[in-house]
Length: 380
Image 1 (spheres, one colour):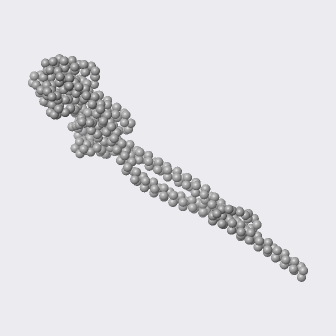
Image 2 (cartoon, helix red, strand yellow):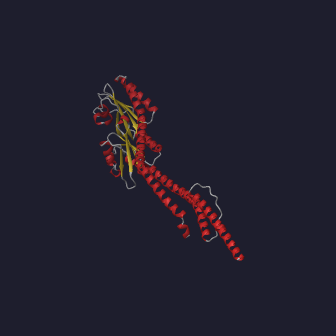
């Protein structure tokens, strides 16, 4: 055993392996050092792009309701105010085609109104205190997305879409928030990650969230600043006031990355939460692969080194054994190698062959000399 550990094969195998291990580790550390931040930034960028893509998908979904509301507004604008019954018939026809809309309405500048549920406001009803009328009316003719509100008649949360016409009438529709929640849930299911998305309006009120406790109940809206335990107040500051696109927050259960993307011209934002483990997951995968590559390379190099030195030392061992025979005077037992190798080992083997021939010649000459001397002594 001691002989094995003191052999050239073992010593040089260890030395070469240590050199190669150091080279492999330093090379991979340098490579991974450059890729480390790039991998993480590209993972974050991927999440950002996915959030933006989902926001665009959501915007296209809303465009459907916007298009229907605008088409309805164009039809209403062509109907004289003394034909309000025609508007009511139009409302009923549209409601029959889509149960996700709970209400259609039109309110004229003189506060004459038509509601699809046949509601008739009192003569002194103040429309200016109602967001569904006030916001579109004062939005300079731009299509308006009003924050989610509780609709008492339908007993549901609704998102209100409104548009002011050239004759100053406001036309709008109430879309059931459950429909928006279903859309957000669909986005969460299709995303394939362990995070979640939620939708907030332009003022920071949560419209749709996978956690019901984070959504508006009855007539009480939930603002991001109300959810301090979730650090949503920090998100509101970063996304709405500082216009950042990605924020990292620390939680007891683990860090989370939040990305934000505007939903077209709605003024709303789709916010996606991603666990840090998912962002860094690919990085850890790369680390594992690099570790496996290093281990595999070390094993293969060790095997090749051992085999190389086994062949090398086998020839050196033969030369060593030959010298030992020469030292004991048993050079006749040494077998000629007749080596044709064109290297140092070949030179050594050929010199050993020459040495045997020389010693054998000298031995024969010596024996011949002894024979002659004995013959001479007999003659004398």
